[in-house]
Length: 167
Image 1 (cartoon, rainbow, N blue to C red):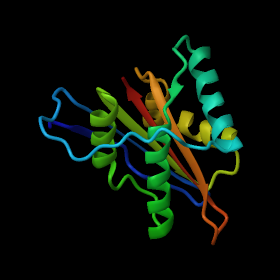
Image 2: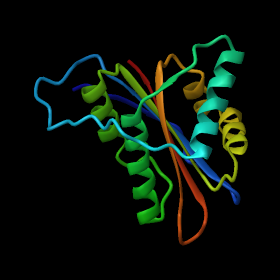
Image 3: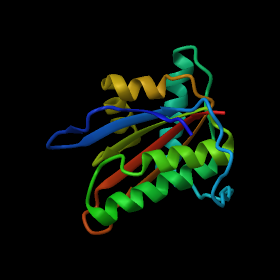
C-alpha cells in the first residue's frame, strides 16, 4: 500500500506540546491483517465538548460538520495509552493507525492532531487553530473524526489524540 506521510514538527513549549500528521492512499491492500471494527466507545464530557467545538468551527467556515466514528476514537485512545505509558508526546504508530482506518473503514485519507497538557476543550482547540498544520487538519476535506482525551493518573496532565478521515 502506498502511503504518503506528512508530519508537522512537534511543537514544544513549557505549557504544551502539539503535533499533526496525515496520510493519503490511492491503493487498497490486497491482503489485510485481521481487522475488527470497534463499535463501542464511551465518550466523556470533555471529548463531546471538543468534538462540538471542532464542528462549530467547521460550520462557521462553511464546512461540513464531521461525524464521529467510535473505531477512530478507540484508535485515538490506544495512542493516548501508548503516550502515557511511554511518557512521550508523538505520532509513533501513525502509519499503522492510518492503515487500519483505511482498511477497516474504507478511508481515503487520514490525519491526526495530538496535544498535551491542555485543561479545557477551548484551550486545545485554540492551540490547534493557531498552528497551520493542525488548523489544516481541522478545516480539511474530511467527513469523519474520532477523539480521545485521557488524563495521566500519575501527573494529572491530559493527552489528546484527534483523528480525521475522509470516507
